[in-house]
Amino acid sequence: MREKFIEQKLVKAVKAAGGIAPKFTSPGFDGMPDRIILMPNGRMAFVEVKASGEKPRALQLSRHRLLRKLGFLVYVLDDVGQIGGIIDEIRSA
Image 1 (cartoon, helix red, strand yellow):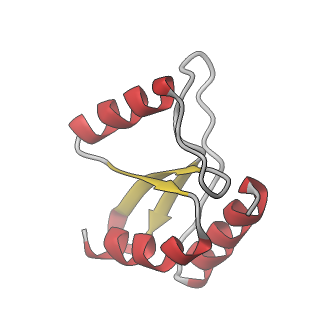
Image 2 (image 1 turned 180 degrees about the vertical axis):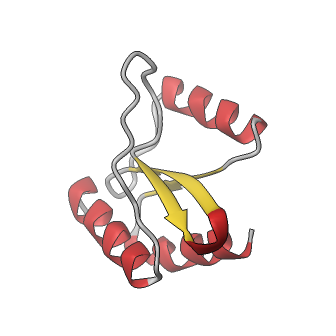
């Protein structure tokens, strides 16, 4: 599946679950995840969206490690079947 298709499904599912999934841009700090997921009750996470079977680049993995070290949830999404589980984890964190 194409990255854009997976990303659209993520945004729609997050909205249906009562949250928002704005595109996350960080000028001057490359490698940050594509989306920030904001759910009710102050729950949040970052999601790196990839086409099916693709893996994050080295810089992206470095940013994921940094965010996790700071205590944030970070996911790599490359299949629409993962979306429900990701949303459930964010809500229960």
